[in-house]
Length: 590
Image 1 (tube, one colour):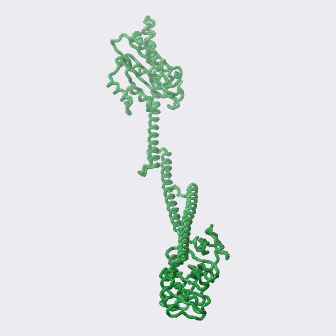
Image 2 (cartoon, helix red, strand yellow; image 1 turned 60 degrees about the vertical axis):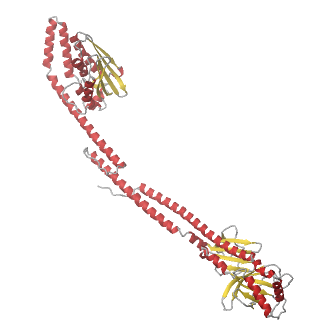
Image 3 (cartoon, helix red, strand yellow; image 1 turned 180 degrees about the vertical axis):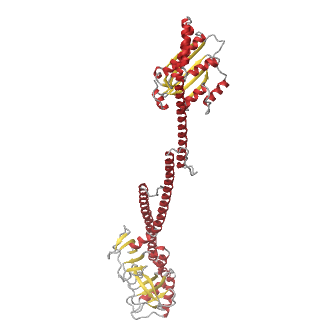
């Protein structure tokens, strides 16, 4: 049955890890955004507060410019002295009024933010002022806040004043009083400035909706952007100059800033409610969180999709292996054509299955041929008895007639036939060399000791196993095809050595006629070829036996011998006799 896809524990761990990372990243991102927004808001408030402070500072330090027309002519000074020297009930003459209007207009022209200029004498019954748009003197209001030093010679900063014009409208102003004229004991000039200059400074900044901006001096609040602190006796002692976070006497939390002018004793502050600052500083937080949630959802969906895809590919491979496990070696895993790791695994499994099938088929062929060989050997054990008996009769007759040489020849021939028919399919290298030596002895009788045979066998590998009669065909090949009829002396050297840790090499070298390079290359290609005829018992048949039993890396190779002749090189795996028998699936044959 097809397994149902589920979120495995490793997936859950990854999802928890992903969510933890995203939460941490969201916290860091929101904090950075909050800090940046808060710093931006604080900077805006600082800039607005500085603008308010600078405007008031400019009016205070440029106040002396308003006096310039007074000192331009002595008649202006005399006009003011005459005005302030009046008796309590005495009124200025029309001429004096006209001169005062002219002088005050010149003074108003020094600053476009002046609303009115008042001539104030506390001992006079009537005081007068001139407005910025007036053409004559009007009575001055009796509720003017004159400050706490009416007789001082210096300039004094007064507080806020609600100016009522002739049409009944009210305008907020702030007052600055000049010192008394030189030589006078009473009387001063009071200038009222339009307080809307601060509103214009605040309205130019975005911070106007966030904080309250307050300007105070020793006579009270001069300006409050919220208009709530004029009558409260606002104090700034609780505002810490080194910290932006403070609590007022009522326990309310604020982000604050303050600028003091200690020389003139006025102060500018801003007050931003803590909750508003936190709320506005986190204005980007919902967007950041929404973006991170979308990213988390996308990552999770992508991860689950990828995991599900991988799971299906692994499941497909598992199902294919299960089919192959039922000995269906013709089955091949399908691929998705993406050339990914799973396609590579599938291709390797298919290649492994194909090689396994070939190995099983080769093993089957070896087993079948071995069984046929065993049957042929069993059959041969019954048939050659007549041949053995006949050869033994011939040998006996020759021996009785005194022909000892031919009798010995017949006796060796009989031993060779008996070895060919009765020998087991596997023997040791020592037994194979002994059989080859018997065969060479028979050939030496034929050629009357004209053939010199030498052996060089490594003692370490003499008891290793070998397929029966694997070397004799290579020796016979020399006498059948390479032995020179004209040569007086024939030489053959048989060497058996350990070529590598698991490889044994036989070298059969002779001084025969040899082969041309073209003929030798042709034979070597046939010996290495994938398809070799099953007919014959020569080198081709031996090469196929070696490759089928020991593997494709082993076989037979021909080389030219120096100075003449040829060399047959046989390589095979190093295996014990028991390992040979186990691989062939036979018991030890006695």
